[in-house]
Length: 590
Ligand SMILES: *[C@@H]1O[C@H](CO)[C@@H](O)[C@H](O)[C@H]1NC(C)=O
Ligand SMILES: *[C@@H]1O[C@H](CO)[C@@H](O)[C@H](O)[C@H]1NC(C)=O
Image 1: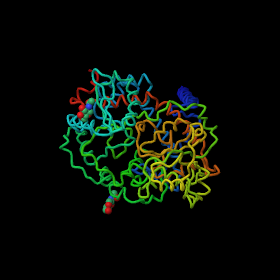
Image 2: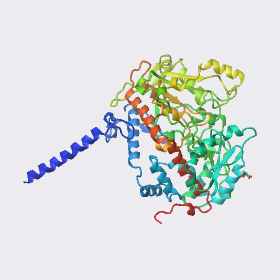
Image 3: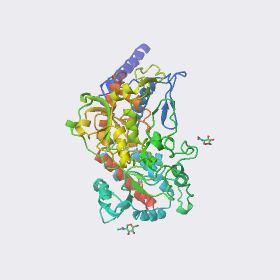
Image 4: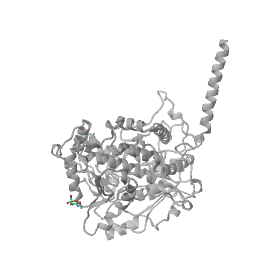
């Protein structure tokens, strides 16, 4: 009898196991847009024996390669896929869950109107409704400021050039309600407000009255003083309000003022001279893209981005926190990020964008103008992101060190190998400026013509022929990323701007993050597409990321996703700018 029971239990277990295996084997395309049957080897999720060589994951968002461990990109991809699955799996599915999760994260209740926002999210299938940490972080310091003072500051800001103000009242619809532009600039600077109004039009009946000042420019303009912002954050955490007069005096030391004491950039003479501090000799890759964008943690950023280069040692920080919306921001600014409609496209005509396997060109593409910085004999343009990209990818003199892409996922990657740039670069990159030099004095224009390749502009169809593209910043953030990630090509992305979608994307699943100085560019390119003759390629992984990127773009960066972000942002902002914040708070179960 007892044996019978044991057999029965075993049988039940075997059937259950078979069902589980069957379900796993038959699930076709999951949320990653990835075929589960090609699922990645989970070796790296397994507990590690104590003596297994490991890479060093550093607090600055970079992983430092240990030559005795396998190529770090295997682990980076496996970790990212796991993190993305976890994020999708824990998303709230009911309003009550969403409110509970909101309170857990932000230690307060959601704003009034959160229930209507939730309805919008459900109705339009907006994904990952809990993942708005960056939006909250943008607003958090303002929670520590007396609303009366914020209102007075906003009113002053309306009169400061350049800006436009968008708002609605209890009786009038969303509109541009004030502008302040340098003379003759109206038509140019009002332009982007049209796309914003167009987004807000869809939800205006459900928005509370508000009045918000926007910067019309490409970059952020409100630099923070670290101690001043910390004082406001501290007050916010303690649920106190500070008056402007309570804030500490700023330290007018340029960029350094925005960085915490003890951070690498606080200690260095950042933004001076033509030569950046030397890079590390070890091979490093990005594992946390947001941390890797932070200039306070990465002193070399001050040489490799034009926004930072142009200001040399940096501007004087603001004496207050100015609640000004902008199309992008950095870790050193307190502009409030918006989901910018600039550059948004629904899709690329399918005729112009063949599937991955039908794209004939296996080089990495970049075309664009030399925007970002003014080019003169005296200005520091040589290391700016676009000239630097030209130089690095077209150089045929000297040697390049790379990690061998030939090593399998269970063998040591070994010490970097050295290859001639002349054999590598022309075979793997198609990177050139398009059109003619701009933003340069006549002599420097001639120099730029001479030292860099210039080709004709490409059509979207021509760009569609390439399997790999690189994306770098322009004057501000990169407005072309939406097109690139929709294009069935694998995108390598280098930037200092954490954009509005960053909480709801997964680097190494949807695109490949690259360091601002491009010190890892050759390694990531060679890992995916192989060396100049294609040896060591991991095309299956490349195709997978390219396709997952496109799937993500079509599901997480729709017009409705921009609207959902803006909707939530305006609800939060309206509460923040209210003299009675409690009255603007959602009262759950009341
Ligand atoms: C625009 O803002 C300025 C500065 O606060 C203010 O003086 C002016 O009255 C505002 N104009 C409108 C139309 O609200
Ligand atoms: C900052 O500089 C001081 C003196 O130059 C040095 O003692 C200290 O270790 C540095 N701190 C960091 C975080 O680099």
